Image 1 (cartoon, rainbow, N blue to C red):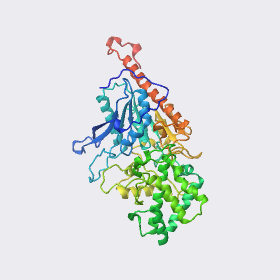
Image 2: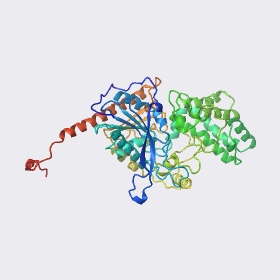
Image 3: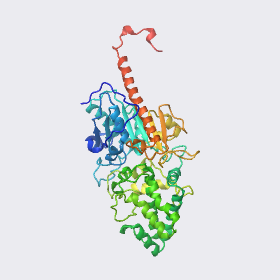
Image 4: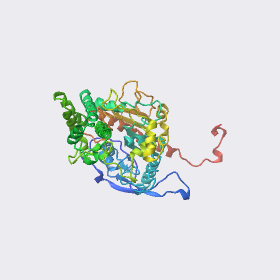
Length: 528
């Protein structure tokens, strides 16, 4: 049992642990959850499933907080192994660490494969309800006092969930670290965020020379796919698998261009100053091996070298193959390349799968998309995001409609959404295409308190050298000062939330006296 009396607030900022904790240091737990938390009829109860989570209790000191990672769209081990901020601050503040797996993902399967309509409970509302039930269970299991502060952590979709968790369950979550959370990127938010900024940020990361050469190469793919000789050149240099050779030249070119374009967003998200397998593990690509430090720069090197080489067709395609090899073949074990609609990730889910599908989630509750192929970005051909077409494609693929108001309905208007929040820190990095680093006059995809009015308890920080939730990662000597400053800010607010929770419960406890008696009531004590 864990007991609680007081918590020592520790030093001004968390220090590196000196060791690299992983899921192997944690205890795996399971809890029964309702498939549907919001149906109460006896005949409509769809039953239960087992949700997985991991705990680490060695840091816990009496009175310490509960640090709760709000699981993303993937196996929870990924976040256990990479969310260094929780580990480092947890060690300093004596926290109980909990990493919850999102329903449908990893080993938390809600229905067996082959079950008809099995994704119908894959929603934000159901996931947040899972987390609230789990936290209530943890308070009972570890006998945590009511004064224990619960702090939610999340990055990317997990960051969106963390901010929504604090918004919808403020009596359960005392504060949230929402890293790289593009909560305003959803269709229907007003004012409408920029649809071009995602690819413009990638292009800025790549630089002018790389961007121009890459775009020229994509155009060349379409030209080469029109002739047998050109297709042979593509096949030889791109080492495509048998399933990638299509007779229709336009279809082949579209597949290759999609395959070639998809990694750049992930390379930009993982544009850390040190080698990391966070992106490859999350995307189930490249054998989960490390990407190099600053992978966008490394992927650009073959295109930059073209400036000093004869610009032959073959040289451009060889540059393309070498560039993307660092992502798709990070492990060096890939025998050939498949262009079968992987969208920058691993193999698509098989027909009849009941495993988590983020595409299903974006179709139902978070419809979004980007414009690409304009003069300001490195991609080709030009495409504009059409929400009507997107919703039609969702209906065709999943048989569902898009209701972006449902899971994150409080986001309909930016000003109202931000005004209704409290105790949230939003962080973003300038290297991150999901970030808020956009030209003046454009509307950001996330919360940036520099350009929008924020309540006193909501703050934001933009890391000049940060990538996708760089602040959540373990401290590294390569970290720039801005990343370290972001972590210090987050630690400051977490300490404040912990102190406020303890003070609030202390005041409440002292205010409780004997029940009022009739003789205590006088005209002066009655409020009219």
